[in-house]
Image 1: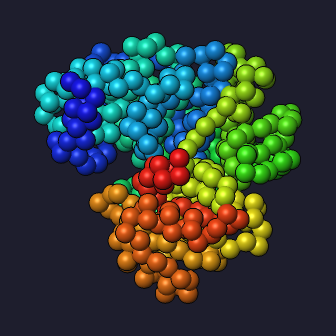
Image 2 (image 1 turned 90 degrees about the horizontal axis):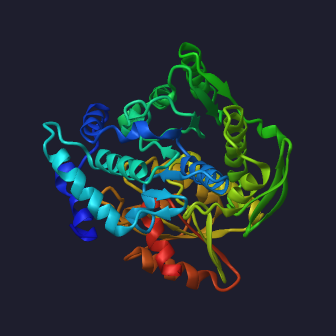
Length: 420
């Protein structure tokens, strides 16, 4: 099997769809010899900040000398981004070989696994074969019934910032969503909670009490910002002075505080995480399409924010970097998102919009999106493609302006390709 054939198999109609539940993944793990039992895990759920938090932790563990796996979704440029070891993506040949290895097991199952379940199984086998000591594991959707939850008690479960998302699958209220995500909390485990959402926090605190799990919070009041510009930021958190991260979004300081609390708990469990490797790991973190500066003439930022909570964080970062400025936005959204709430958060910052349709069957047509924007009183132009929208935004802003592409991770890869 070639790499192209492997991707065709993974994305084929046989595995399409989303079915919550662990039975299929558990069956597949058993058939594959339970690779997930050969490693330790840091399990990460939440609405926003999962990927950035995972990337920082994986970089720290790698710099500290641990053979570290990283499993995330979705990908931005290449499928292989979804599974990495010590910062290196799975090679094409290994992906093809492992897909061919898993294929007969998947086809023999009476209840066929979904694409995400197949990919999770593939990653587990790769991490086990490569003898990873620890895997930073990002939940795909929810928590309790997500296929990543086949693991035993992780070293730490982290729940990042909470907001309303995936309401059709997880439930209409914040309590419903929190209950689904609280499913990664296991008896006797350790949990680090971003916090700040009282309705969700009550659920997490109750589940931790029921399961005798130790609960830890970062103290965001102890964050002291120092420097902040387009190359990153420097801040102090508790006894960590002058910490530097190359991630620009203002919210990344809070994600980093969650990471530093995780380091503290891991140290108490015997993990060797010295100060300098931790600092090097944070400084080495790369996480594309999360308030990423792609060029500076004009400044062009791409952010994968795709729900109201994420868009609000993006808006706050833009205000902090460019106080009083109006921006040109390249925007594309999924039709099943809370489009009005998303637009309401960025319209006050907008000079104009270029509406595009991301390459996804769930995406809203550019013409409809432009029409909705104009009803809010801002000029909007429907573009033939993402590339057309990017080109028009760059031309409109000139060398001294600022443009920002946001609304969907599914278009971030194309935006990055246009400006690479």
